Length: 249
Image 1 (cartoon, rainbow, N blue to C red):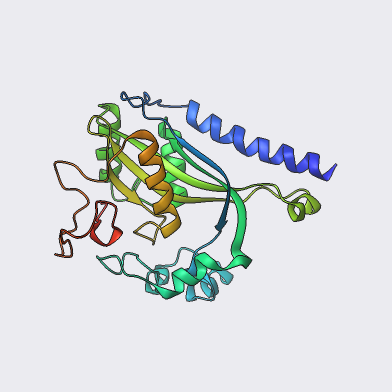
Image 2 (tube, rainbow, N blue to C red):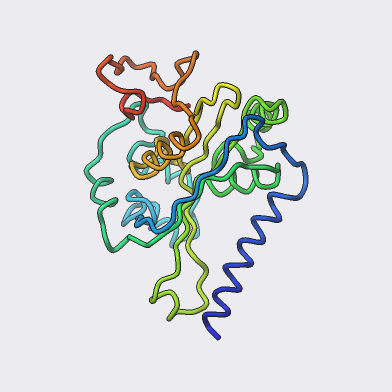
């Protein structure tokens, strides 16, 4: 019975996402035929290293999870810097077996305004309606409606294991890893943004993004040079997927 309840809850979660994708203002699929990405059986750590034993965790205890003080907590490769920085804490987190779960990686196209809002709220980024007027959202919405751009979301979802089956009624953990903007006609990956306050992709998300790009014939830069950062770090020795030269913004 517990496994039946667990399966029902997981199915309900999937149906809710389907509902979000198919209600309200609908977006046409990208006109170039780019497909999504699914990779099963991946071992991936859930969570973020910045949230382990940090001030943000303490504030959460007092019901202040979205406190402005969160911005004072050091987060690797976040809004506090404009260049990618190698981080020993992050590398250790990505290898921490206690955080690992067998998971399915997905990259799905956002096909409705409802789902765009859901992703924006979940990742706390500029796809959500903003109190200051939502100018960023309207800019992106206009690009989607003109079919110049399509937006995609990368998630990892924990797969069933024996411990979860024993616990029975828990929903599968889902973590939103990246919001991606694709310039449709150029097949250029223009933006790849992690959930706030993260800015650059995690190393594992960066690999999965490259796998999707290889599968669909996408490139991380184009005539605009959108991945070349403005801070002088690019040298000819770095390849197009070297994250040190990227500024996917």
